[in-house]
Structure formats: structure tokens, C-alpha cells
Length: 95
Image 1 (cartoon, rainbow, N blue to C red):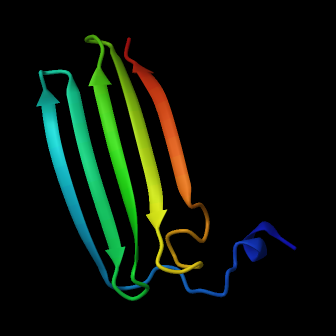
Image 2: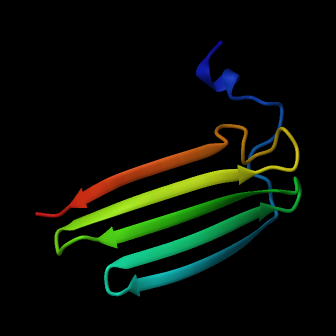
């Protein structure tokens, strides 16, 4: 099997109708940005929640954290067909 065939869950990707809400607070004490986002698929009645946190350590260094989790109302839907949860942390350094 090819890699593309293993990703086929029998469900079509890219549904048409979504609702997205986002709450964003920028420059908390001039160093912290927080974004909380939720996307809800109206056709599958499932969603995906994500958070993005960025912390400005100095003028040249920034730490970030991105978390995503599928909120499923069933075992198979577009949001958890590839990955159910993800966590990413990193550092940006500008010279």
C-alpha cells in the first residue's frame, strides 16, 4: 500500500460548513501572547480546539507552544482522521 492509501478512512476530507471562534490576548505585560481557537464542523458535529502561546524572552528570543486536540463526537471524523492530539514547543532566535 502506498502512504496515501493508508490515510484513506473512507470519509471525504474538506467538508464545507464550519464555525470558528477565536479569543486572542496580545502583549500581556508586553511579553506574552495567547490565542485560543475552536473550529466546529457542522456536518460531522465534531471539532478541534487549539492554543497558541508565545513568550518574548528578550528582543531576539521567543518561546512558543502550540497544542491541538480533536473533540470528537464519534470515532471517525475529519479532525481526528490523521492525528487526534498534537503538542509542539520551540524557540525562535533572531540574529
